Length: 304
Image (spheres, rainbow, N blue to C red):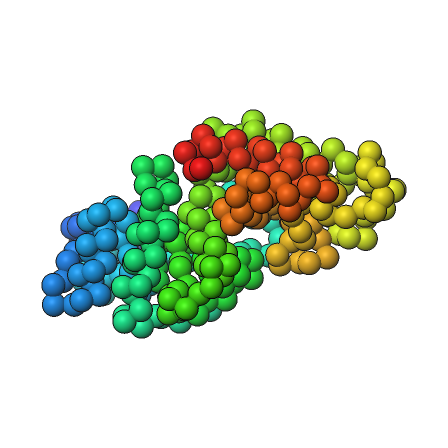
């Protein structure tokens, strides 16, 4: 009797399965390269961005949603997929401390795009051409981040460049800071490449060798005492350890992550000439030593 029930149940199950619709498993053009720009001569902004793309190989967008596509799910149901630039990114791999994020941003006016493209052409592209890969650029107006200010931010597949309406009125000093922030965003991944691991280990060791019982990274100012700092004369400061300043997110701590330390040095190297940097930090030999390592990597990348 049990065997008969089993056979009936099995046949009923097979009948249900046979009536079920076969899942849709064909995905045409789902591997589209969304960063490959297409021209639109009827839209002055898109056309200007496309010309920039043709010249430099870098796509420029004014909206983080860069495309859409009709798709079919595994059950044959049609839906619209939207490709959105990813602004979330953990530089240098494993995340520690509060993650760097874009907390908010606003889209820029299209009328401000020509000035932004001119700035990129004259101030940024000559420095990175043939040396650094930039997946894309997103031009925005206002931007707030918790780690990298309000000028530029490196996302997963884009570099966000903000404050574009203010470029024409920027003073020379502000424009230098602005340029340095953009270059920092574009250069950090290349500087942190594994090919420079041995140089970076020396860079990190400069600060670490003076701290006992804990790591120099993420060191609270409470521990800047002779109990934990060895081999340095007082006063004990983050600068004396070789840090340019405290963590940009937690001001009572040294940089929590090694990548943030590197990022701060890149930006400082980009805003100062070699002589200016050495004069500015002449009282801090450990900063000058770490700068030498970063300069060595930048030189190898062809960034003068």
